[in-house]
Every structure is written in C-alpha cells, then in structure tokens.
Image (cartoon, rainbow, N blue to C red; front, side):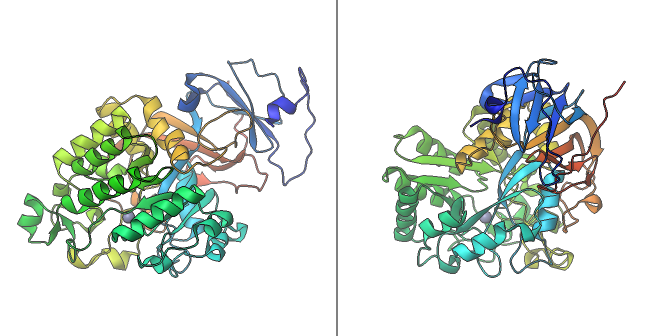
Amino acid sequence: MGLGASAPPGSTSVSMPKDKSKPGSLLIKGGHLIDPAANIDAPMDVLLRDGRVAEIALPNKIRGSADEKFDARGLIVAPGFIDLHVHLREPGQGYKETIVTGTEAAAAGGFTSVCTMPNTTPVVDTPEWVAWQRQAERGGVVNVFPVAAATRASRGAVLTDFAALRRAGAVGVTDDGKPILDDEIMRAALLLGADVNLAVVQHAEDTRITENCSMHEGPTSFRLGLRAMSSIAEASIVDRDVRLAQRIPGSRLHVAHLSTADALKAVRRGKRGNAKASVTCEVTPHHFTLLDQDVGEYNTNCKMNPPLRSAADREAILVALADGTVDAIATDHAPHATHEKEVEFDRAAFGVTGLETALALAITKLHREQKIRLTRIVELFTAGPARVFNLPGKGRLKEGFDADIVLVDLKRKTRIRPESFLSRAKYSPFENMHVQGLVHTTLVGGTVVFQDGEIVGKHGSGRIVKRGLRG
Ligand SMILES: [Zn+2]
C-alpha cells in the first residue's frame, strides 16, 4: 500500500519515531519536478516518509508534515537515475574499483541504482555470488542490481541457472565483455529468459572478426596503423539476435552499449515487429559525444569496446535518442587502474569511466546542442531503464515508490576534472571539457547520500542532511 494512503486523512502533525535506522520524513519544497512516467514537468513539492514517496502536490499543497525540509528552489527534482551497465569490479578486481567507490561515483552522478556486469573474478554465474554483491557488507551507497552471467564462466557454452539467479536477485543475464556467439546457445538463452522473465543482455560483437582490434575501422585507424573493427561486427550480431527473439514469444532481448547505425536499424525492425518479443537497447554518453577521430594521437582514454564510431553512426544515435528508439542511456562505466591505461594503445585496457560525467554530457550535448527535451533525457535515465529490467518501485516518483531522487542544478557550469572523481579510476576522455548541469543532491531510500560534491550519508543510515530554507 502507498504510504500516503495509509496516513490519516488531513493529519497535519504526524509524530515520527526517532529511530535512527529509519530515514524519517523529508519535504522537498520549491523544486521543479520532472517525472516522465507520470507526465509531470512542473513546480511540485514532494514528501518522503520511511524511505518512500508519501505525497506529491502543487507548491505549498502538501498535506502531511515532515521532520525536515529541503529547499529545492532553482533545482530540478527527478527520480533517481538508473544505470543499466556498470562494472563495479567486485568480486576480485578491487584494485580497479570496488562496490564502495563505484557506488559513490554513481551517487555523485545522480544514479541511485546501478546494474553491475558479471565479468569479474570469478565471473558472477552463481546465486551465491549474486547474493554476495547485494549484501549490505559490500558498502554500496546506492542500490546494486546484479546482472548475472548467461553462461557458465561466460564461456558461451552452458547456460547458467536463470531461475536460481533471478531468485537470488539478478535482474538480467549477460556474458558482457564477450558476446554469446553460438546461434543455438543464444536461442536457448532467449527461450529460458522468456520462461523466467529475464532480459538477455547481448554484448554485440562478432569476435571472430575483431580479434586484436583496438578501435573503429576508418580513416583514423588507417592513419594510426591500428587493427580495427568494422561496424558489421556489431550489426550482424544484433541482426541475428533480433531475428531469434522475434521467433520466441515472451523473450526479452536487450542490446548493450549500441554504437552503430546498422545495429540501430536491426533494433528498429525488432521494435516494429510483432509484440511477442521485447527488443530494447541502451547507448552510452561517449558514443553520443565523441568520434573515432577523438582517439587523436593514441589517446588510450578513448579506447573502449565498442569503440568510438564514425560521424554517421553518432548522427544515427542522436536521432534514435530523440525519437524513442533508444530505451536508456547507460554509462558502461568500466574503470581500470592507471597502469592498465597508460601503455601503448593496442595494449591498453578497453574501458571508460562514465558515472560522474553522464548527466552533464546529456544536458550539454543532447539538451543544449541537440535540443532534445529535458523530459526525454530524464526518461532515458529513469523510466526507460526501469522498464528494460522490470525494476519495481524504481524509475518514477509515485506515492509508495522508493524515495530515490536526484536534484539537479541545470545552470551550473563546470569543467570535467577526473582527479576529483570519486571513482578509483581518475581518467576520462572528457577531461577539461566544459559542460553544464550538476548533480546537487542524491537521495537513496529517502536518505541523502551525496550533496554539494561529497558523500554525506549511507543508504539506511537514517542520516538526513538538512538544507535550511533560504531567505
Ligand atoms: Zn560490453
């Protein structure tokens, strides 16, 4: 039941228990609410109680009372962002990132939920490891939703136990980092996914033709003399997957970090086709911002997989972001240690940081330059991703939904400074870029976890940082 509905009607002074394990109640007042799922783009006040949304009303019309008030004048209030594709690197690779540092970076970027990829050491292919990633002892400051391996050790040969993984808390399955290449295994994964209602997330790359390649095939790879991958390597896998999915009623295919115009065409076919299968896709901020030529003189910060593509590919992505074909912006935050990036280009690790720059890039590149509406951008960070993985209580601000909220200062201009990242990985292809839009405050379950540039609390700690009413 929605908490607002359980409050006595017309009550003005609800006495809150002073139990420190409870977040209590907080009134966010004077902000501009954007909640695409509810079609709201207007000044609204929001009352949070016991970790959930209790009431949403026009300015000064909230009926319930609150322990604390938060002055949100001049700020956008939106559902907390959801990132469908991050690498938190635990278990096993804590020298690159940990669940603590990765979720702190997420909070700084306005993300209240992150879906973590299973290509860790060991690979997350059992219910035990899924449960381990979700344990409170891991110290995550935002919600962590594991995406488990689709095949044992992600070797692409034997499917994992999807039902057991789902019961342990997995929200999807993938062999990310690698594709599921074999037609029969992919078909079986989509069938089993349909059975247990899990999305199969494909890292679309025909690795039979991309071996030892380190960037996109084009004039830049030719000039630099680097082995390069053609866009066909991505599009052919997406095309095959869409055809497989469409023959399996109830199947859910999700294309990770889509980067090419041709792969988009296949996704469009999948979305237009019969409604028996769900075909969704995500794109990354680096693919809508940068081009293969930004690799410049072997800049390893621009080395990621899929690689930065051509201007035509980026143009197609921008169109698809605006027209609704793309379901979510996902960062593919893939941190590495400095010694893994500061080496020769063809030996450097693939991967970019993304959690702390995604929103500013979306506002700067998509909203200000491309004139994509803010409501659509917020949808790509909230309701869109929540739909892809069926995350209940997430992605919108409705009575009874989780009090996961981000407050954004749209006007604040900044320069991207990787040395100030909360992520362990202090590098970025966007270093020194001037951007607009800053995450002011992030709340998870009604608790302020990030504010004014620093981590201030932990989800469930009951700590609410008060920002006194101004004036
Ligand atoms: Zn991938």
